Amino acid sequence: VALRWLKANVAPFGGDPGNVMLFGQSSGSYAICTLCVAPAAAGLFSKVALQSGPCLGGPPGRGWGPVTSISPSAIAREVMAQLNVTSGIEGLRAVRDATRVQWPSRYMHDLDVAPYFSAYFPDDAVVRS
Figure (cartoon, rainbow, N blue to C red):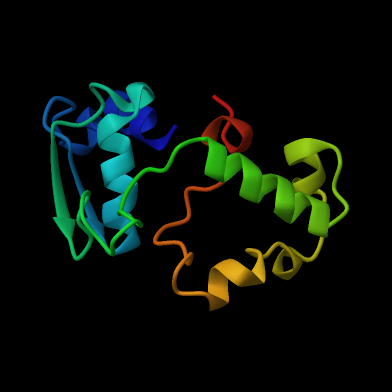
């Protein structure tokens, strides 16, 4: 959504919509790696710069960057179950105390499965065009 807005509105600010560069540091680098392969982001930027977050590599068996949709969906279902949310993303939005929406503890306390970036809730369920 933000990149589409930027592309459509950067010219009045003196920017060139054909020359948009994204920069990401740490988890922002991983997010940019995801954008580089996201069909919905095609044509919305022309260059990227990554700092301290490679698209490939990482610990054995736990590469960096985008994950399959199986893992995000499973984790989203687990988080929702912990909160007794049954109505999908609308139910999560209705949780008044955002501190209750937490990663399952095993992901935060076990370095063998800890996440490297937070793209575990599928974008199409969170962002509406």
